[in-house]
Length: 581
Image (cartoon, rainbow, N blue to C red; front, side):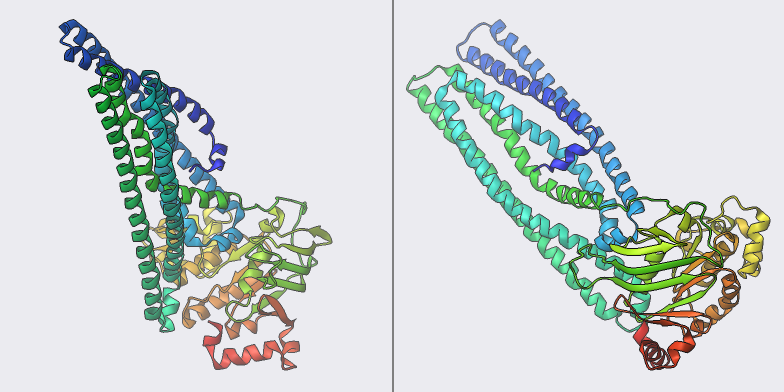
């Protein structure tokens, strides 16, 4: 019903106290509303003076207005809480995505995170607006009314007391069924989100391989399953609402018959019977409201649970043990027994990364090759400090580290991925990504080294030309040149990590970029993941990855001298490029 972790959010306990007080006042307003209405009707039936009717009707009107005032204040307080707290949850979620990085994103799925941050927050806000008010009304109003009904007529109180457990029992049974369906439906929704986002990302590759129609059928299957689960959930929700409405209506009807027979037999006065009959619908109303809105809150509760699960993802402990660290020709990194598992289940033998031994030193060009899924990107991310290994022995210049998530290490690092991140802004601002304080002259020099000068000179606004989020408005080749210009501008960073930076470029554009990239290699430790043969010739050392492990490592000449994983991979690259796509 309510996730206990909800009380960890700021302001929740204070909200409960305020709602409890206002709901209690609302309960008494409802009680007096029924009492004074019954009194006026009895006086009218007994043909008493007009004054004896006007006075209770005036009190009834006051109680009616107070009831709706308290309800309005309740709703305003809850709406304000829901809006502020949902934004707080969104902020925490985005902070967690930022601090946890690729490890958490890989574990949860990008589509699931996008769904949680966008649709999930809207569902949570609606959940907050409904659950607090409905739950508080159900917890406070019926007991207050029931105590008064007991005071007026014992038999009526017993009747209502017996009916309520039956209603609650049906609520539990049908609610559990709806909860199971809603859980499955929300899980299917996150699967659909991940499939859709992955399909968008991989659409160019799928089209190139002729698999786009086959994957379209996969998306249709997942979407149809989501539709089917949604209809099953709605069927249970409608059935449960009907059943609960029928039970409460039956309860009121039974009470009305019982009271009518009592009045016919003169077993009790008119006022207790009438006030009981007036308050009985109000007694059941919070239960009916809660049951009708319960199903609307299920997706919100599921979304909140999913976000809490993400927020509980363990962050990497920050540590800065590399004081005054700079990488130079004498620097050295030694890695032994490094293990990383995307599932975070270290008992799982199929680790995503399992490195026995690796050494990086000086200004060396190191190539990382292997088939798709062999662990190249995972190794690159671990070395960049974007993924935290589960275990391993790491030493940098003789200092022992738990992981590479070190500020000093990452301040020495320039990361050049397959798809460079370009934000909405000017070309100059994008070039100065790593060095925002750079002068115009420094930016222009970096752009010239990256071969951007002719392109920028062709633009009417030059370096002040605005480009869209994600590099909209410029070609993939120019995006990669901006990425290279960033690296040239950050010349105080001496570690370059390339994660297949030319994978999505045609061969002509790649060869045009090769010269400035080779210029960038000078006086740097270069870690270059690739599946293009011509880049291997530029490497001093090669690491061959297979199933998350280093199958072979050594200089290209050493690895070529025997028929091992390197030679077999090169043969595949020359004969069948599809093996590495």
